[in-house]
Amino acid sequence: MMPNGCSFVQPVTSWFEALTSCCNAHDIAYSASGIPRIVADEAFYYCLQAINPFLAVAGFAAVSAFGWLFYKGKKHD
Image (cartoon, rainbow, N blue to C red):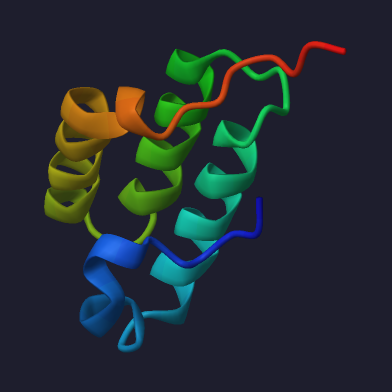
């Protein structure tokens, strides 16, 4: 899976390069990396916290509610 800079908020991410970086790291963590979902979501929260506390809360709420749709979990051979 290629990271896509948080596809649901593309207009916003074009304004905040740091946000795109957080989103890409979260995408990679979700893409069958073996990282537990809660660990990926917490890392996303702390990355966003460095940008803006409100953004961190909103972003964490979004991935908590809808992240299960995209999380690939551990890759099985």
